[in-house]
Image 1 (cartoon, rainbow, N blue to C red):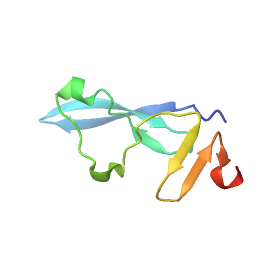
Image 2 (image 1 turned 60 degrees about the horizontal axis):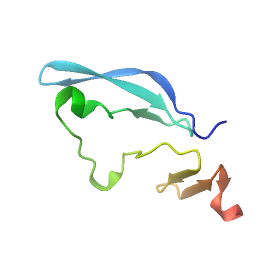
Image 3 (image 1 turned 90 degrees about the vertical axis):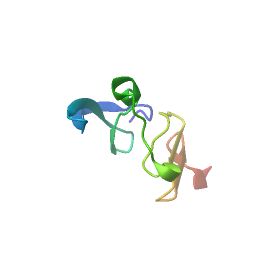
Length: 83
């Protein structure tokens, strides 16, 4: 699988002040599902709070994959322990 592939799954809706905002759902390289909030501020004027970045994927990368909860670090799909 191409490690830089994130595919569009569908969309979800978030209600803010009685109005719905459509947010794309994406599937990452490890088949994790995510809500794309990259245009939330443009659409609503609001930002998000995620203390400690525990629920945030910050960038798409075809080079590294990091999952701190599970202790996973890969470089180009190869576990770092094997390099």
